[in-house]
Amino acid sequence: MSAREGMGAKAGDKIFAATHADGDHVYFLGFGVYEGDEVPTEDAVGMTASLLRMREHENPKLTLDSGEIVWGCECYWGPASEFRSFSNMRKVVPVTVAEYHESAKPKKEEEK
Image 1 (cartoon, rainbow, N blue to C red):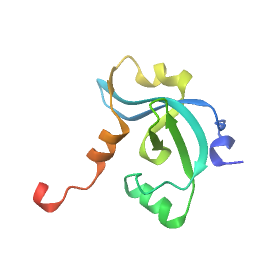
Image 2: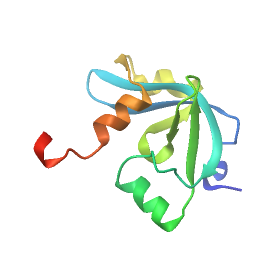
Image 3: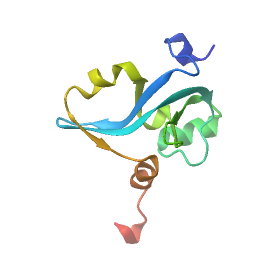
Image 4: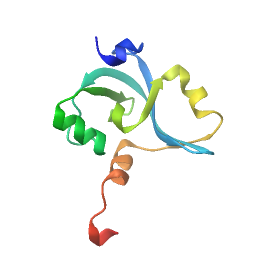
């Protein structure tokens, strides 16, 4: 049993994923399915994803309805049925995983 399954999530469960929320907005990646835990692939961004890969630790793999894959370490996620509560009446701003990955990459010195 994975850590997520111990918290109630099971492979195949419908989920939502969001990059973040602020006072007025929720930056929404989409709905999808929790696939289980795997070691994040090289396209996963951020320090946590890098550390997980280096240590070969598994993390929730989320396949969105769009076909895009995002990892638990890259976003906030939970049961699809809890999205309304998570969004808390804030404006939902759609974001693709590709847009999120591009914005999360470190900027090269000449781009700063």
